[in-house]
Length: 224
Image 1 (cartoon, rainbow, N blue to C red):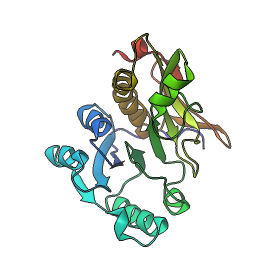
Image 2 (cartoon, helix red, strand yellow; image 1 turned 45 degrees about the vertical axis):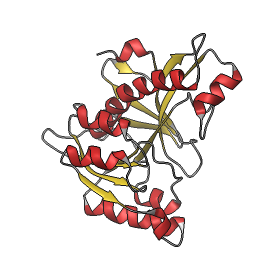
Image 3 (cartoon, one colour; image 1 turned 120 degrees about the vertical axis):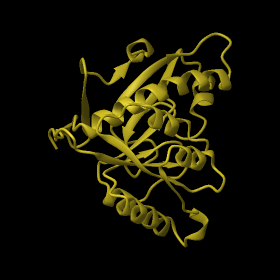
């Protein structure tokens, strides 16, 4: 892939998919994303707060009910059509609670990112925070990764380590991880829009971030 730097003044349209409250969406809407612009938000659950967040920010908000399609592929094609209609180049899964199919991935090859509340490949899937507590690990965190056709198995782009503290329960740990998600996701999206994604091999990528190449970060390193 190599580097694909963007020229000044070029807008890179981003589509965000969500199923719930959309707090990571809000982090994107509030951040300076450089050349990236959230062009459309697509939600698959009626009444999801993410729709309200998009409308409040003046961003096109689209509801596509996955139950109204005969197959996962048919639903994904409807989502792809909406993204293409908005000129989207990058897609962010921000609390989107569905696995995407090859129909989706074929339309946006290596251009779909997800954020997950663990240091992948540890604790994939749902309730990652509870998995971390049950395993007794001392450090967990969050991961931004490219999406493939597995569950949380795509190439890692960035990770933030979060300590598991004495007395943590699922709620407390989840909140501290979420704080770091809100910091790292906008940073990654901006870097992607600036063309800072470099492919090193078939499943190896890295981001050239300000200050150098980094994949694993500490919360302190994201304070600015």
